[in-house]
Length: 84
Image (tube, rainbow, N blue to C red; front, side):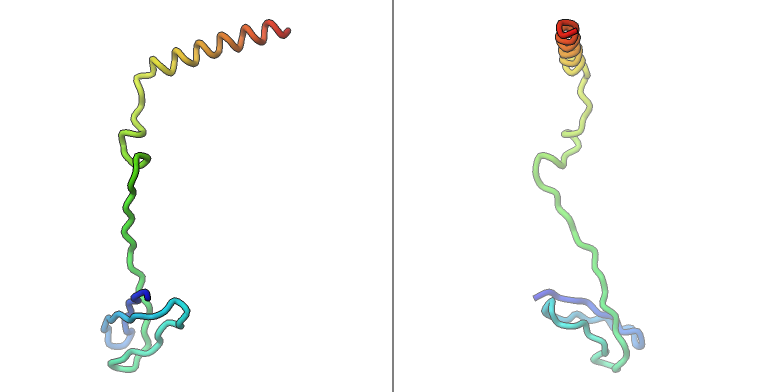
């Protein structure tokens, strides 16, 4: 069961309550009987795996990619010239 945090608008007391997801939120403060609001807490995110490191997005020196692109474009030009 999730734990929900609440804060009273009248007295300012904060408390936590274990509730099912299907249960409606609390509306009354257990201490003073005032109205309460549900609090939202930030969620911690942890990225694991090889796709989330700064080194995965490092720019290459460009020499290997330029050679591949030049070789590919030359082949495409020859194929196109042969077709026409």
